[in-house]
Image (tube, rainbow, N blue to C red):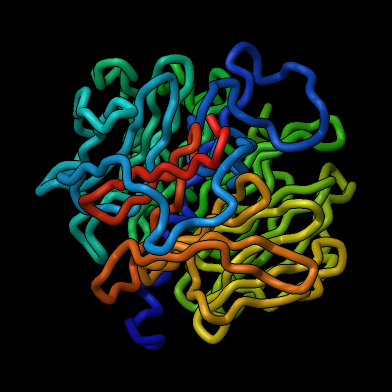
Length: 435
């Protein structure tokens, strides 16, 4: 889409990709002591959007250092997923993915050989602007948790798809569906499921993971609605924090009580905040398209609790693809006039180098390299060096001209999973001796 008309379209992209971010904490006790830092899932594999820690980092080694011409070997593909931009999650031998088919949101389970196991529905498909499924599932304690674009949060049995409970979060918290649909990937915090309806009865809320009952709800912010980004969960300064972005603010909430700790204005042209925050050592990085660019915010003590103050800003104005922080460097793509990739010094905010021959998209990190999927359908393997991005492989996933390739890559046990609407592809990216 063109830049002017693409505004709403790609804002929605944020709604589809930056939106979905689940974080799973200790299943036994959300108050269990832990070190400062991101609180990850206790489940194995890739159990939620952007991995165990929701940071887009895979810790596998022994992957291909370079790809052959045409890309890595394709192991299998499946079609019939339906329309949507959600990424797969993988846990305990199964892969889970969603798609809109006719009037229903369909959740599907597959074996790691691509063979179907079951399918179930989670309410209605999204039929309004940019039809398609948005959010990825989250796996916790042999259950799946998922939010559809109409605000229906559901809990399913992971081995069968049987629905255990469902909640209309818009109705419960007096909220309105945003223009491009509810897009968050649910955050599971032990015995609680975090939802962010942006309603008059709660900006953010915790549901009982067993029953769907409300545990707490944070106070609302006047005039605010749900954004398109999923929140993150971390411990800092003796407190467990939930940090997310609503329609016009970044915000922080106490994960134990639901107390709203701080808000920070993030106005954008179409009220689209779709990029998941990045946490590091008492700071959070937030970004958004056009009007409000990237900022690193420091958490600080304030009257009655916690506040934030800006440290630096950057021209990185990510919309859909998230950001990856590795070794003090932030890797992300921009939007519109910044439609390419950046490497930023996280200490100073200074742009170290850029890659202008690859369009904006999403990325994950594994074995010293970035796996970047352009929204125009090109997949690239990039090795960051001191001087710039070295291209170690490149191929086209989608041959037709598109600008909505928004599902994020997934890497699990030497396999690269890529999705475009109705089809999921599985590639072998194991190197010699890789497992």
